[in-house]
Every structure is written in structure tokens, then in C-alpha cells.
Length: 271
Image (cartoon, rainbow, N blue to C red; front, side, top):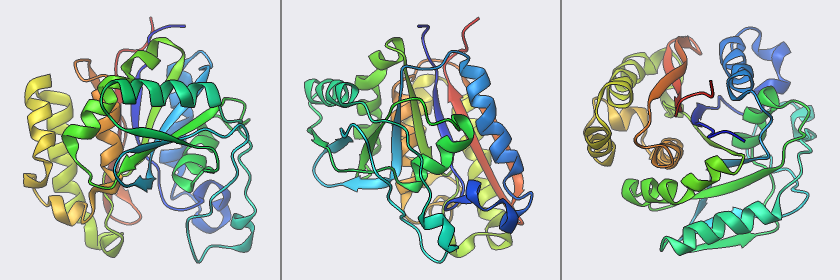
């Protein structure tokens, strides 16, 4: 199993893969980028670790450790059928224990949660990548303190998983302000995305880290992320590949009528 890259994925909104009739072509470009992740990775990974913006924990990290995770419909106002969705991927208790061990050994308090199901940041993103749901999935929470240094350090601790056949995906959004979702967020999302592209694609690893530690100084930072929960997974997946090359694998400038959104890969693809 080769050295796998990591990804920060802008996961879209709600259960969108099951709402093509309602959304039309809105998600076509995002869906194509997710399908392409499977092509880029090539080999089927042994398991997937999803760092999800939709699971926040106090005082430390938590890892989903159930063998057959259920579903968490953490959205409201959607059609009835979206509350019956199933993404029946198995869990991986052994991987969950490995993740907890790596983080605890690095001084990051981490516990297991055998009851945690898949939230929509996980199943909506994974449905286009692995539609057969045949790859085991484990979820990692983010800490509610949103501390960049802590989450970058967590990513460094998890880096060995990349050589163990584990694909690490950070699920969030490069722009997440629901009050400005649409044309109202055009300026803020464009300005913040321009900064993010510059930081991730052009700066040295050292300067990149410093910029992300002070991300709230970026143009329109708090307009793009009033709460940075959907940015936090980026820090973890970058930490797991912090000195490796970066590529933008999805970029759209008119998402939902005006938003600029992006996804990124960290690490070189296998030859």
C-alpha cells in the first residue's frame, strides 16, 4: 500500500447526493471532484478516517469505534426520504483504537465512542467517492476549542496512518456562513478563497503554518467563517502532510449563485 495523500473536502450542504431532482446541476462540479478522488487514490484504501466538522467534543478528541455505525440526520427541513438514507459502510474498531493510541501517545487526550453514527458531513461526501460503501469508515471529532495548533499537532500524530492504507479526509467547507449562502457571500468567499489558495499553494511549509495559526487575520475571515468549525478539519489533514505538495482539486466560483469554494489535496499521488 503506497503513501496515501490527505484531502480537505468542501462537502456541500445537507443530503445533496440524494436530492438531484431538487438541486439539478448545482452539485455537478462538486460531485465530479469527489468521484475523481477515487481515481486519484487509485487503490482501494483499507479504511477511511474522516475528520468531520459535524462532531465537536469538549476537552479532547473522540473516535467512532462501532463495528456497524448508524446514521445521524443532522439537518432540518429536507424531504422525508432524506431521513431514511443509509450509507452502510462498516466501522473499523481496530483502526479506531489505533487512532486513539496515536493521539494519546502524542499527548492529545482521546476516547472512543462506540455509539457514534455517520453524520451528513461524512455520508454525503463519501457517497460519490465510494458509492458501494464497501470501505470501512471511522470518524474523528474536532475539539470545540477550535485551536489551530492543537489540530495541526493531531494531524502530525496521525501521519503514520497514511502508510497503513488509511485515507484521511477532512470534511468541512472552505466557506461556511449560512446567512451569506448565495450571492450575498460572493465577495467574502472570493476574498477568503484567494487568501487560502495563496497560503496553501504558494507559501513554504513554515509560512503556511504561521498563516493558518493566524487565519482570522485573513481578508473577510469572520465573514467566511463566523464559527470556524468547517475550517478545522483542514488543519488536521494538513498536519498529516504538512511538508508535502498541495493541489487544488475542486474550485467553483458560482456555487449556489455566487460562492467561491475549494477542496485541496496534500501529498503527491503514487506514480
